[in-house]
Image (cartoon, rainbow over all chains, first blue to last red; front, top):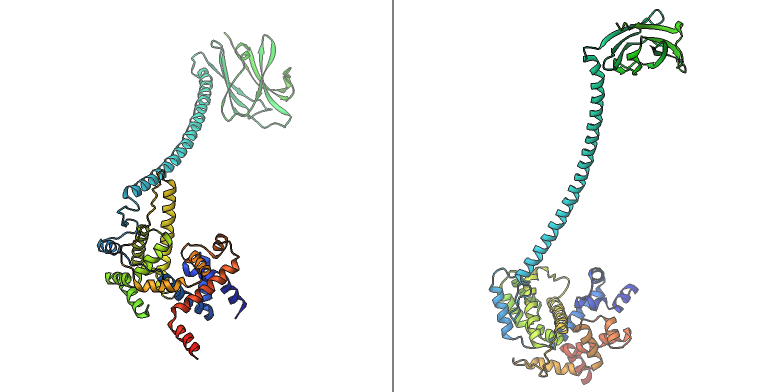
Length: 267
Length: 188
């Protein structure tokens, strides 16, 4: 006899398999031994016979009442082991118990689903609030831009506004700008139509002559036909001129650097 | 139990023919009731166990595989496990009850006792008690050999050997051919 077979027979696996006390893996192992080794199969057959004889030695007449109850249950359609009654007449699992379990399960599932939906809606709500805040900020920004534009274009629509055209001399032939000045309302703006290209260190600067003094109004830049506000000094100026200056100079306007000039006739 | 009768019962049960159940009553009913009684030690509980077991057999006959076990082995397993479950739940219930009813009167069955069973039992009682104790623990109390070893305070090896010797002795009691053989040997 092989050692594995001897060891198997010495264990209690076969006896436990006989009485149904083995688990799934043990069942597979035992059935493999029974199918593979004739001596194990023989021992198993012997044990089955012994068990039957041993169990039959305790036989006791089965009461007629038990037989009758079983006969009654067999004649009842749709026999269910769960619903089968015992001789004491008690149901093993009442229908309402099953209904309660099912409804509890359904309520649990519904609760989980609703909770998930609530979480999703909360996230969505927070996203909408963020979007609303962004939109509000945009509106505020747009309003302020609108106000700025209104003030810029107010100068154009006012009948007291006068239009002055700057045209560059031979040093800046391409220079063309239009200035709008309203001395009554104290509004002024300039529209730079075109500016010639300059070396990197040079810029166009605008000056206003106020009470005989040249005041720097700022640097002229290509603004893609946008209307730029001019500082307040422009309204009181007797003339405005554009010069080509080095970037650092804010103090004086050299005569030889002048490229365009307008004299205002206040009368 | 003849192989032919066993096959007939299985076929009838599979066809859901109630004659199969009647044959089961006649040829296995007493044995199953005896097993249930032996485990539960309570006749009312044993009746419930057999009734439930017979219904399980009726419902689950399609899962029975003749190649894996004899019909008796299969229905024994069902009855034994049902009885152990029933006993455990009954014990649990009685533990939970505040008032415990105590019955000093042992309930005896009103049914007539089969003389054949008495005869067999008489022979069985001739088997040494040390073997009977081990076999009862393993077959009727749902113990593994290890559990029986602990419960009976015996080495595992002793449990194994007593089971084997007990079964061998039992075979001598039941096997008529062997009895004839022993008798003829004695005559010679």
